Image (tube, rainbow over all chains, first blue to last red; front, top):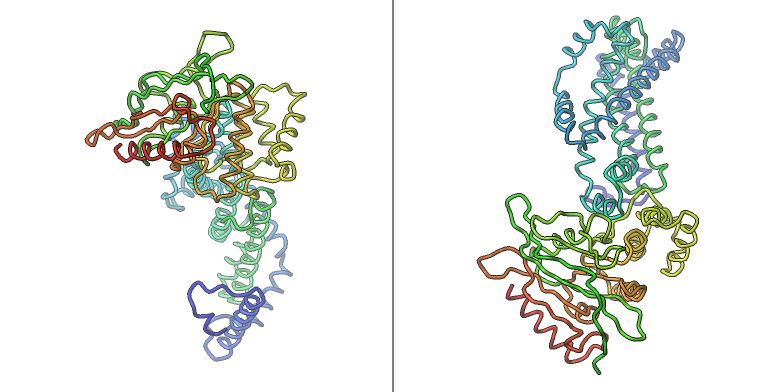
Length: 261
Length: 271
């Protein structure tokens, strides 16, 4: 058994996998305790994190979570509204070069985008600016990934649709839009992870709008490590939950195999 | 015993077709003419095999015959509804089944066939009964609500063939339908092709294969596609074997068939 654990590509039985996860969980928690027992702490102690979490709850953790989720939902909605049509329009030769160009915007730095949004007359509030920044980031990555999915569709699928007397718009609908909707959800899942990771930075641009990023920023001001760590854990757990929900949404399509990557 | 037959009108004319992709000529001056084969007491169509080494342009020729690729030169004619007025082939006129038996991944087998039937202009009121009849006849009734990703290769292949039959009518082009199949599945596909072939007088099946024995067993005409010479790497028809005139079509497989296999293999190796 021990030899199997250190043999490349070895596949373990399900109970053994569970035992392994439990082992690592205990090891991480154990390391956390040990690393916070001495004089100099590598991490805040579990007690201080729990205390920080309690304080954050008292000070409105739930409304802050809702604020962050709302920001993410708004950004996702607008990003999908912008990037899905853009990616699908890339199949039209007229728009192809423009949309390829938009995909290259992913190399733009965040600070520059924030500056231009701040000076834009279209942005009326701090919240709108946060949404704007996230939409731009999410859209450029979403378009890039979807373009890659479209270019990877085997030629046989287009030929099959065409051989059934479908016109080009019907081919687009059946092969790319309906035929790859689960891929679009998978891309959304990957992009949401990026957005969720950027949350603290974006929410700290305008503190008055609230959100989990604001909690971290406030705790950071007073170097309250317990509270920072607690907020990080909350962000991590919600991120994992969102990831799980989108993954389940993808597999809810009956034609998607669980084994499909 | 040589079977009697007559030749009717032209059902397919590949007229001096060339295809160039980018700057590279792939096939050149390909000409094939197929007639309706009429046998007293038999309702059957035509079965044509195209054989040749890899990279000789079989797939390009097939895509051109099915209208999925436009020829750079020449034309492909099929009969129209009006007698003596052939039309140039366009996308969808000729059914095409590729090696992977491609289907729409988001549709159940039933819905694949329903969509194909709609595209084949089958009246709305008849679609369900027609699709169910075919599913039952081809042993797919139990799998009708499954998606292609959950079906066996054989089920997918049968559905792909049926989709094309429903939408395109009499013509069916299959690119290497026997590729990668086990002995049992090869027998299934042979039965399927014979079933399609017997379904209508004008039914015309064109398939490619690397299994020359199978081509000789099934086809009533075999074309060899290859390079015309060692220094000219462009595919063209280098030989044609009409098994009807040779007296080998529709006969039990015997010594003469084996001799023909040897002749065809020689032609393939030389091209």
